[in-house]
Length: 620
Image (cartoon, rainbow, N blue to C red; front, side, top):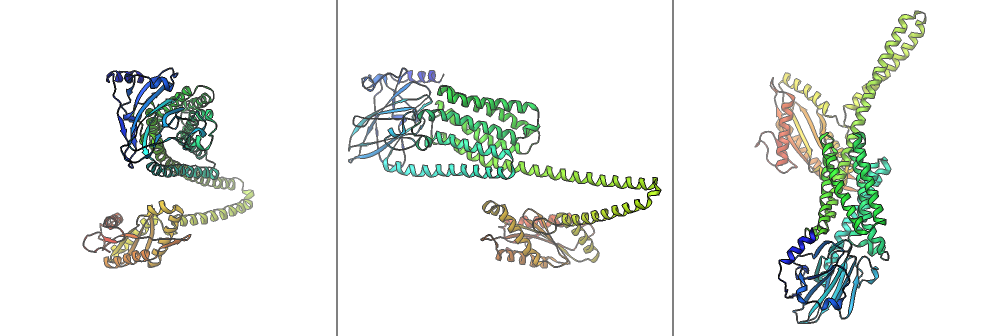
């Protein structure tokens, strides 16, 4: 169908094409060779350079597109390009072929009678320049006009993606490209090692599948960008051709296993697992085709597998999302980013859309987005597992208490029935009472622990609710003011993102200690949640509360957290509310107004104290 459309377009062009030269003017922007190219298609691939040079002018047709792409075709394509040096001195230029997967490329006219012959189905040592892509250097004398003829033939995408640039511009372009590629593969390596480490610690296979997926996807990208032929197997062009669909199918296989685990499909309807097994079998089949079947068949098989996984994955994600499974939302974003980018890259190979830097690196961009989002999805899944474990522990404790209650009833019944064993029963009862006493003491200790925040040692939100209710009742009886401070560590998410959550925990503990040192004995300081703290101050008017808030803010701002050699500056935004409570004043009233004041402090630039009523306090 693509070939038919191309033929129709060519019929609309004039039969006689006048060749025009492309003037080479040095600059930093590469020149696209596609619009200046002319093509002659050789379906049999039997023509030689002499017969091609004797072709009439009317046999050549303009490429008329930037990337010189002819879709997936095994035909040979001869391309002609006229170049002109308008300068008054010789110039050194480079013709860069942006498709590292071309099987063969011959170039005539670059260096006298010397023929450039390269491609990924030829030994790497034949290339004039040791480069992952096909680099064709040439020199034009002052005012010289030269005709280059290229012969391209491949079993994959017949896409030339040629650009022209000066040798100086090429060196600059190569340095920036290698920097970006190094960052990309470095990010993949870090993600693989990180998830593999978590697997070793937790034995959660989802992290293993994800690590293997990242590793196989990295290999796939290494092959697609030409690095593999340059550095891994320069003398094995046959394996290089097989490795591309093989690595694609391998990455798809581990992606399927990871998706099956992350979406928790094993615990759902058996149809999920059946379909997953079928996709796994298809992945193995494509891997077998890559090793035994013709390249084009294996390549099409890998594309079909990718489309099938995209459709099935989309349906699975939608169903799990509908079931209320939280990680499915994040997985949907990551899956969409990678699949859309992959399909975009596949479609560009057919020639339906022009090849560009965006299409060449679409999978890299999509994979980086996918890695970040999938990591968040794994975190959400771990949090859900922890919550389920906590609920199971609570249920186990309830069952244990019920069992102890039934044991007590059984002992009492035995005492009533067998009076002859009264002494023994009394001893056992005394023992049981001692055990119950110990259990009661343990429960009291547990209740006390439940009153405190496990990280900072401060009292928790529940204690604030009870204590504030009691302090409010006392203030109503005495007619004395009561104040509430709502405090929030500024930009704390940035601390976690930059230094890690362990350092963030140390900062929370440091802030709690600094606040606790400023509190009176009858004041109530609690960790309200996350990086937020609250304090209830009895017998404290607005100015006294503002004074204490400024002390807290200045003290924390002047005392950075020192942890593991790091010096981390922290600041507080504080909302203050003080009132002599009336009969209708409630605890929620105090918290709400103090929280509104806190939002005002943050809106005014953070690291400041604000009150419920604007104008009572200037900027700190």
